[in-house]
Amino acid sequence: MKNELRKKYLLVRNNINNKNKKDKIIYEKVINNSFIKNSDTILIYVSKDSEVDTINLINCFLKSKKVAVPKVNNNIIEFFYINSLDDLEKGSFNILEPTTNKKVTDFNNAVCITPGICFNKEGYRIGYGKGYYDRFFSKHKIYAIGLCYQECLINDNFANSYDIKVNEVISD
Image 1: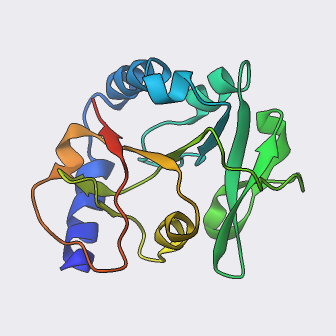
Image 2: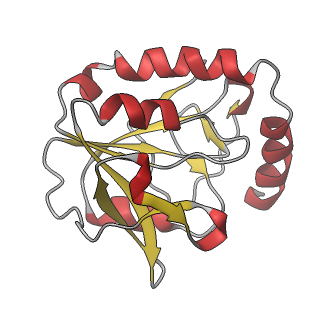
């Protein structure tokens, strides 16, 4: 079921109308979110292709927060602090990854902005199917916010026992 939903909503996301407008709406909601405002550290993915844009968010957060982006090592997602977008280079899956070695070890007062192809109303997500974020959330109790477009908020109940939901989903 997840594979069918993944394919279907990747196609939906790849054909989103008014993406820039929707990204701006999501951006405003994220920067005004109380959990974000009260956090010291933002763990955030670097968007690519049709994902909700995070480049503008990263630039905004770099002015006032500690910002860390993910890198996968041996099938484990780890987050590394960056000081600017210059600290990123293309890595696995053609995703921009941190070049720094300042690994995040303290997740107190941090928020994780989490990617997803689609999310359901309970906050469960369908990602790319590798389980990196679920394994990360099972080890670190951290407030997680999923980003997605309204068209990718679904009613289906697809969660498995190892899936870990985000605390909230922000959409346009």
